[in-house]
Amino acid sequence: MFHLPAGPWPSSVDQLRQRLADGLQPLLVAPERLSILGQWPVLSRLALDLGEARADLAQTFVRPKPAVERQAGPTCRELRIWAAPLRLGDFAKPHIDLRATDLQFEFVRDEAGAHWLLPIKAGLSSVKARIAKSELDQLFTEVARRLAKAQGFTVDDVTLSLEPAGPNAIKLEAEIGARKAFLKGEFRVAGIAQFDPSLNVQLRSLKCEGIGPIGAIAARAIQPHLDRLGGIPLRPLGSLLSGFTLEQLELKHGDGETLEIDASISASPR
Image (cartoon, rainbow, N blue to C red; front, side):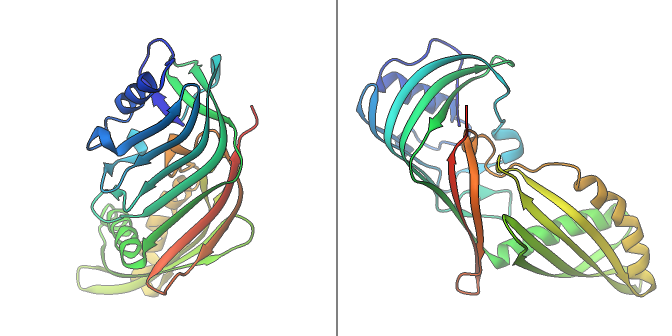
């Protein structure tokens, strides 16, 4: 869950605070955004504020590899990690709130030599995410433009919709207006975002369908890229959710201007 710099395991609150701050340095704007209360090894609260931090999740958060060394860590009555918002690139600014109670942590060194603080037991735990639909539209439009540009097309507009699609899955559909030179057309992209117990997201059943001659040409050119994308697991929040297992996920449309995801999570079996 928390990456630690290599070295002896922390044995006090001050040592843990410093090691966590060092491990989170790429995200933390200032040390006071990390707060740890309590007397070692019983922590009453561990809180991390990532608000307005800018992160490239694909690079900043690397998940732990299989463990080669374990040592008992502290307990924690309350854990909270939140961002209002966390800045992802130039478009997406999701609001995130992770809460957990009654945690038992352990220190882990994985086979790559990385050191971690991971939960092995937790009480009531949840993670909530909220993002403005306009930001999600912008993000999807940028992805569509990059895919289309590589094939010589220009994307003019995108209409995106998301709906629940069964247990821990979200259905996405997008209508995309495209042109090549002076010729215009449309194509549709549809698929399922499936969240697995490890909180990875797998995009499956991705299909691109063209409308009109130009749309059909664009769809044939883009489909192979979607096929490759469907084989890559995505890891939202990366290692911050390592050590947790997804129990249930719910998509909500909020006030009509935002999309919300509520998920209940539990500590992963050791």
